[in-house]
Amino acid sequence: MPRPKVGIVGAGNVGAAAAFLLTKRNMCDVILSDIVAGLPQGKSLDMNQCRMADHHDATVTGTNRIEDMEDCAVVVITAGVPRKPGMSREQLLEINTNILRDVCEKLKNTHAHPVLIVVTNPLDVMTYAALKITGYPKRRVLGMAGVLDSNRFAHFVAERLRVSPREVQAMVLGSHGDTMVALPRFTTVAGIPIPELLSKEECDALAARTRDGGAEIVALLKTGSAYYAPGSSIAAMVGSILFDQDRVMPCSVLLEGEYGLKDVVVGVPCKLGDGGLKQIIELKLTPDESAALQRSAAVVRENIKLLKL
Ligand code: APR
Image 1: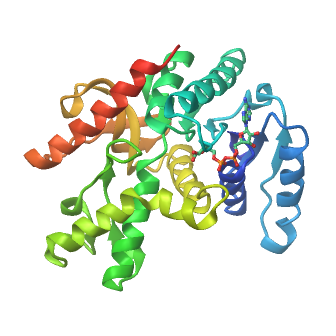
Image 2 (image 1 turned 45 degrees about the horizontal axis):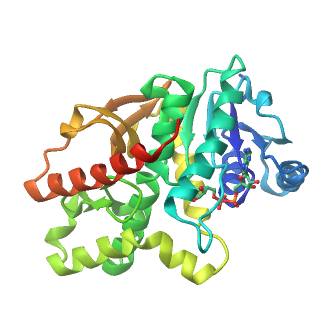
C-alpha cells in the first residue's frame, strides 16, 4: 500500500518539527511548503538525509506551491507570523487571517479534499476563519491546541508526582490562551483523578503553569516560541486521522449546541479518525468548570467579531 501523504504549510519551526516526526515514524510522506523560496526545499533535503541512520523510507518534499498538496489526506497549516513587540492582537489577527485566506483559497482551487489541521495563532479564531473560507464541513476543520495544552499539563503533573508521563492522561479544554480550562477532575494518573493525589492549591498551580506554558518557553528562548511539543501534538492528531485510530483528544472544533455553545470554535474532547472529527464528547461539567468554558468561548467570540472575512 502506498504511504499516505500529508501537506504542511509553513516550513518554520513548528511545520518542520511536525514533518520531521511524521517521517521519522514512517507514518506518511510529507509535502512541506512555504512562501520563502528555498526554505522548504533546504529543510526537506536535510530531513531526507537522516533516513539511512534512522532506518525509515518516508520522504519530505519541499515546495513553494500549495497546489502540490492535491492528493494529501491531511493538510496542516502552520503558516503565519508571530506577534512582534508593538503589534496589537487585532493587527496579528488581520495579518494571519490574510495568510490563512491565501492558503485556503489556493487549496480550494485544487481537487484536494483534505482534513485541515490549523495551528496558526490565534488558534481558535483562525480555525473558525478556515471553516468559513474553505466552506469545508466541520468534521474536516480542526484546530490543534488542546493536545498541546494537555501535553503540557501532563508533563507538569508527572514532574510534580514523580510518575511516568505515560501514566498521565490530561484534559485541557477551551480556547488556546489565557482562558484555557485545565480540568483536574478529568486528569488522571493510572486512572486516579489528580484531586485525590494533590491539594486544590497544587492542582490550581499546575493548571496556571499550563496556561502560561507557551509564554514560559518564549521568555526562555527570547526569539521564537515552542515547537517540539507542538510538532508532537500535530503528529498525534495526524496519526489518529490517517490510521483511523479513534483516539480521543481535545481539539478546537465548531460547536453547534454542544456544551450550550453555538457558532464558536473552542477546544472540546473529540474522537478523531478517518475523515477527521467523528464525535464530540460532552463531559458533565460542574457549574464552575462550565462557567470557565463559557468565559473562554466568549473571548473567542469577541475575536471572531473582529475577523474581516
Ligand atoms: N504561505 C506559506 N507559508 C507562509 C505564508 C504563506 N502565505 N506566510 C508565512 N509563511 C511561513 C513563513 O515564511 C514561516 O516560514 O510560515 C512560517 C512560520 O514559521 P515560524 O515563523 O517559524 O513560526 P512557528 O514557530 O513555526 O509557528 C507557526 O504556529 O504555534 C503557532 O503561534 C504559532 O502562528 C504560529 C504558527
